[in-house]
Length: 406
Image 1 (tube, helix red, strand yellow):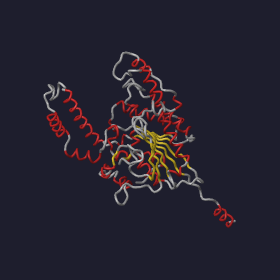
Image 2 (cartoon, rainbow, N blue to C red):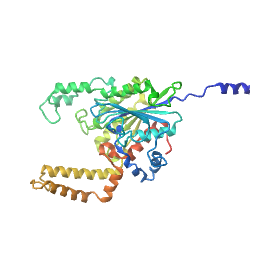
Image 3 (spheres, rainbow, N blue to C red):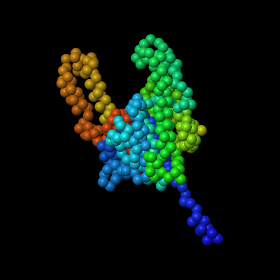
Image 4 (cartoon, rainbow, N blue to C red):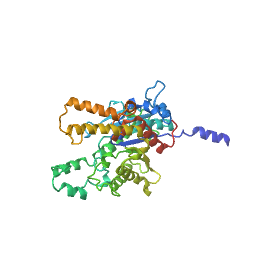
C-alpha cells in the first residue's frame, strides 16, 4: 500500500501556480509624483527605515523585482499619445511624460510590487492604467451608471445668466461631455484585455499551462470629484458625495463583469490628502469612498484602505507656509489694499526681495532642508513624498495578501 501511495505521489503533477495579475488604476496619485530623490526621508523615521531597506538593493540603488513585471499604460491629460511602458518592476514607473521612459518617480506600484514579490511564490504581473485629472463621474464613468446627465443644480446654473464656471456654448459642452464619458474606463479595460491576451509579451515567466488569475484591483482616485462643486453641490450638507459612492459601486461591478472576474478582490485607496486633520468636505468624501466596502454585496472582497495616516504632517505644515508665501505673491501683484504694494509702487525686483524676506521669516532653514529632503510636489499629489507612496503601496498589498515583512 505504501508503495502504491508513493508511486501516485510521484506521478501526480506539481501543483500549478498561475500568474498572479493585479490591476492598479486611477488618476494622478496612481500615476505617482514622488521623486526617487525623496527616498532618504523614509530612512529618517525608525518605523519606516526597514521599508527603505526593502526598496533598495545592496548597492543602494532602487531594487529590481525578481518575479514581478509591470505594464504601465498612460498618456497626457487629454488622453492623447497613450503608450505603454513594460519591464521588471523597479522605481521609475510613476508619472511619466513618455510612457516608455522613466521620469524618476514612483507611485504606489513600487512597494505594492515589492510586497507581492516577497509574499508570493508564483510570478506577478501588475497592469497599471492611470491618467491625471480624470473623474469617476465623467472619464472613468462605468457603463452601468448610464450616460452623463446634468443634475438639478447644474441645470439651474448652466441655463441661467452667464457667470463663473458656466459653459459659454452648452451644446458644444454637452457634446464634449458625451465624448469623454467613460472614455478612460474603456481605455483601462481594453488595455487589461490586451495584456492578458498574451501575458508572455510583458511577463516572460508566464506559463500558458498554468494560466493566470486576476488576484486583485486597486483604485486610487478621487481628487477631481472631491473638488467638483457643480457635480457635488450642497457643500457641508450630509450626503453631498453620495453620487460618488453609487458610481464607485457601479465601477466595481462593471470591472468584475468586463474582466470576467466576478469575485475579484477590490481595494479602495481612500483619499488621504490633508492627513488626519483635513477639512470637513475632505472627511465627507472619504466616507463616500469607504461606503461601497460596507455594502453587504461586497462584504469580504472589497476593502477600503485609508491613506490619510501616511500623509506627512511635518511636510504638510511646511506646505501650508509655502502656500502663504504664494498667496503673498498674489497680493503683491494684485495691489491688495491690506498689503505692502497697495499703491502699486513696488518694482519687480522690490517685490521679489519683499517675498524673499517674507519667506525667510516664515520658513526656517531647517524646514527648507526638510522640505527638499522629503517633498517633491504639491499637496494634491501627497506632497510628492516617497514615504507616503511607499506606505500606501505596502498597505494596498497587505489588504490583498496579508501582512508583509519589510
